[in-house]
Length: 157
Image (cartoon, rainbow, N blue to C red; front, side, top):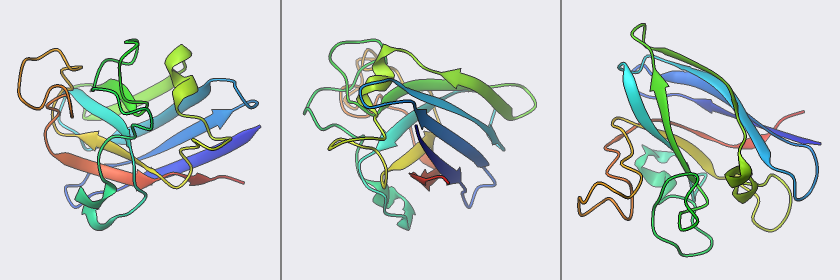
């Protein structure tokens, strides 16, 4: 079993901890965690290509996309590996998600050549339109707006 964690922070008061667990090579990665300080409603939630926060969340690069596909929903066949869809925050500004584990999470392994260790998790200001919004950014970013919090994915002991 491999475990990883990303501690999210921002200058906008958003914080949280995201945990990743993969039981074995080829198994799906389970994602759990909590976030607070976000406005209520859905927010785009993605793995980004770079584990670089030297310029805040802007330096994390594009969505993790090792197969060169268009942006899409987590259950779409054509999607970035890092497209995890939306997380929805309650009226209290807090989100607790117990488990994200679907077949699509095999695209964000912790083991092997396409491991997400050393990459970043980013929470966006707006909902991800899942590539279906018709906006010029739909097929690249889901038109999910600014990056409000991010953290580098690192191995957990």
